[in-house]
Length: 475
Image (tube, rainbow, N blue to C red; front, side, top):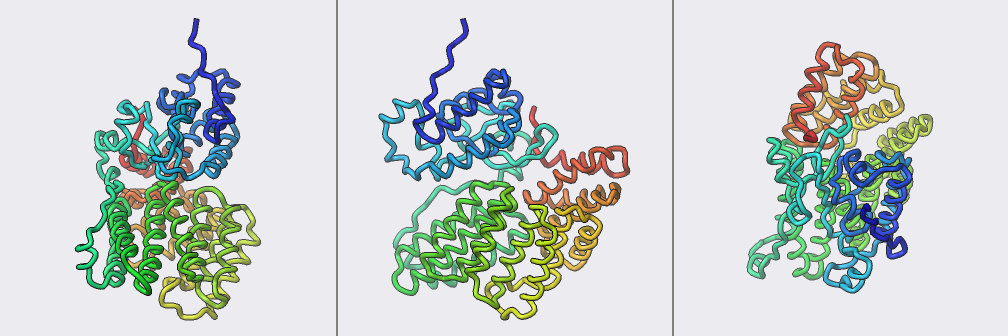
């Protein structure tokens, strides 16, 4: 006689509800846990704990399970709801009694809990305790390239050591002497931030993010020790650090960390009372929402950024650009084109602003428009736009060149020129290998799918082989 399944308690909390619905879908499809684990490439023991709400459920796992169960997005939507409903509880305050009654580790889903997903298909994932040190890396799963958290030792064993570079630093509190001896802290941290931005474009965020995280700890300690104007200036700078950390996290494919840092930045911007800063971070949240598959949310956030921005400022232009791309992703071509024309008009009369949007010019807007044209299926015009952007990009912007190359390659594939697309895509693979940028690799994954029907065309096999060398593969 088979073992009876554990009784679930869907009313105990949002993650219990998620686990209950997961089991309902699984049983409705006639799948055992083992069969579903194989289909979704998730460790069997983890799947059981997901159903019982005994371990954290990474969003990537929810997506994989939703696809494996043909749930039409229901499990992903329920994951989003559960994540929003979960109270932010400090681990020390979790009631052991509640844990024992419901069989769940309530702290698993708190904001500070690590995303842990050990893929049994990699053949090396062990227990929760063994695999808490994870990194988000690109992996080829069911023919697609997805960004998933994998134990660092698995990545190292794969030979792709560069992907294992990013590690959250152990929090260290600066001593009073260190704080006192720093000199001018605002100037010091502002200079460090500029250096890290420059380094990011050359070597990629996997190598820079750990340093930025360490500096955030030191900056927070210095800000808490300061008073008056110094404290306010340091908080504003800490807000910029959080926003930058969100950008770096997004560029390594760690969307959850990106959302966390950006949310902290928005909260801090309200505390500072700096409406320019708030408008900028709202625009970043809009960009993040669109890039992570939530264009309707992005449209609303972009509209909020525009309302918050000073009329006539470049922040207003930035907000309109994000509105335009959100419209494009939603398939609203006429609205997207109107928004880009509005952005050009606003830029023509915008103030010269030394802090916000100094990079904005007509060429930048045309490049942004090319991305939207590709989303709308106008690959001919998109390819022309990206080719022009690549020709004008300074050599020092190494990572950005990789992004533009990958997008240009996808656009050329859309026009039917598979040979040119493969050649440009292969160039982008080299930069992706150097920087580990998820924006490049994600676009190359879409290019890979577009080139699949043309496997015999010149250069296509070489491109696909090059891409396969920089991503993980299930055993």
